[in-house]
Length: 181
Image (cartoon, rainbow, N blue to C red; front, side, top):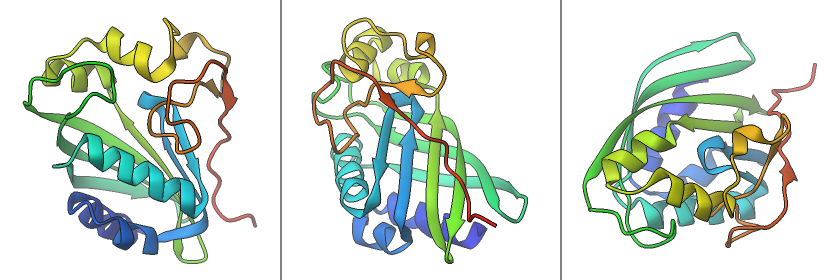
């Protein structure tokens, strides 16, 4: 399991979307809670990765540790990235951010079937010289605090391939599950 996660980290650090996609199960669910996003299946995942790398063209991740229970894997490490462009409704200062991350993976048929990518949005914004509030307004729409929404409810943000612009309604995020036994 860790070998697949490490291979994905290498592909993403090269912004190699085709290499990353080869590691994904057809039922792949990619979530980034800091952005309130979910991508399901090959087409949405490809669009999400392309959009992410357009905003963070120098993205790199170093996995520094992991734990697993035979069905799921959690990795932690450091992501380095420079926010670019105007997708977040702000003008970043061009500094490269370095932030701790942890990633929850699920697997199916020997491939990655789920990835939840956790990091602190405020840390990213502070290191990029932008307002967290402004980014949250762009990503979540209005002045919505995603933590105030009912459990499991989030508004898709810029990385959600189905909603390229901030939406006006919430959507349900389902938990990632490993193989059914």
